[in-house]
Image 1 (cartoon, rainbow, N blue to C red):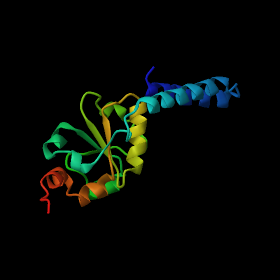
Image 2 (cartoon, rainbow, N blue to C red):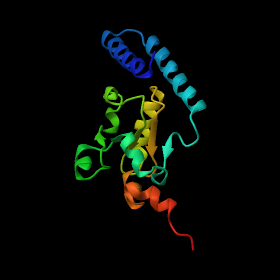
Image 3 (cartoon, helix red, strand yellow):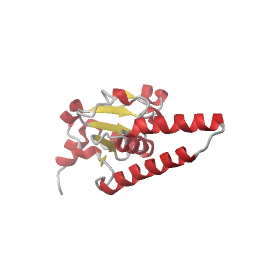
Length: 158
């Protein structure tokens, strides 16, 4: 069973059980299974949890990615990485149908903390193609945006 389906079933069953005054035994079993899923993920995730630095992304690689800005619509409207789509971090699983599993996905927020949560949720739910932009939009912008890779690679050494 995929994890996003599992969470939908878990929360629906918990709500129904509470409304009907039923036992929470099933909900407790579901919680144990969810914890086991996350523990399994943590055992095998690569060091860094799927993060990537702006300097590691060549400019032409952005065109091959689905870029997800996990900030709110107001922040996205002010400025964002070109080509990004806006899915607020709390909505990534609810809108997971918009997120492919067969091409690279880059998620970011302002600093990397909210997108890390969104990225973790997606990776536990089965998206192993998700990378979290280390330092978020602010660091990406400070390091040169789409030119961060070429600036890092071609910076003259003194």
